[in-house]
Length: 84
Image (cartoon, rainbow, N blue to C red; front, side, top):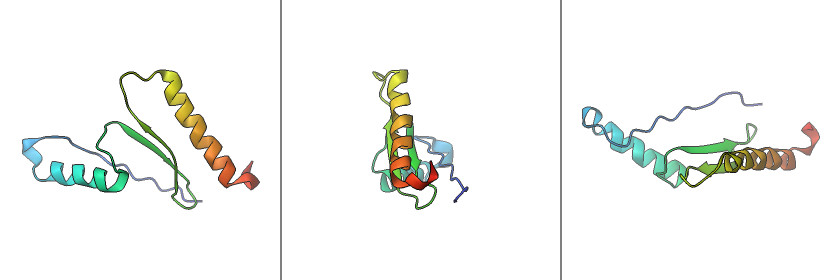
């Protein structure tokens, strides 16, 4: 089981760290195909396949986030039924 995690810190704009902020923004777009912040993604720890994605929208409710977590868990259980 892969227990390593990567923390991606993204800066949207900071003149003190240019061009790093632009490089981070490009990395987010290239990796996740979105520039939305915050972005939460659940990956399968065995094969690093994306299981669920949550992109923040101010109209969302706490239940929307719980649904995202449930979707990630359901996708993991479907991919690995032997781990129940």
